[in-house]
Length: 169
Ligand SMILES: [Ca+2]
Ligand SMILES: [Ca+2]
Image 1 (tube, helix red, strand yellow):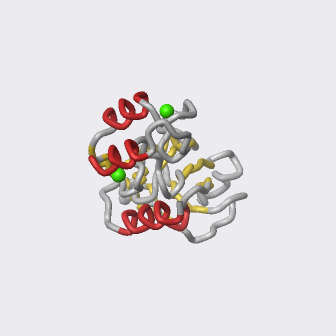
Image 2 (cartoon, rainbow, N blue to C red):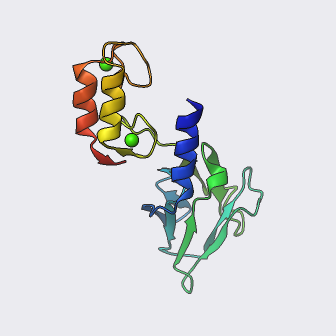
């Protein structure tokens, strides 16, 4: 297991191209108010009206993790989710006037650092022939690392599940 974790950590150290998640400012709301993101994703806030901003921090206080203006001259703000936020729920709000007090608060829900990758038995963030070999090597056992479909036995179902996820995670 230690080896698998290490391999996961090494593969995550390589730069990956994340998704872009859009949050739209709409009156005193961020829409949607909760977005699920992964480390490396870009969150892009888009302005629609008024004078607002995006400030990380809970309870209407600013923690400085990220801050960006949202107004006519700054109609968008982008933030790339940092590795240190893995597994956390990050609260942010608008510091203009009493907007936070009026409920202009929203959340980034950051996924765990190692996203699940069914069939990636050796933890190299890809499902390849090596994973099949590892699976075959434990055929008929109850090794939970290789029981991809979770039915308690390393069997044909796991082979099918692994083939279904063939390629990079
Ligand atoms: Ca693999
Ligand atoms: Ca199984």
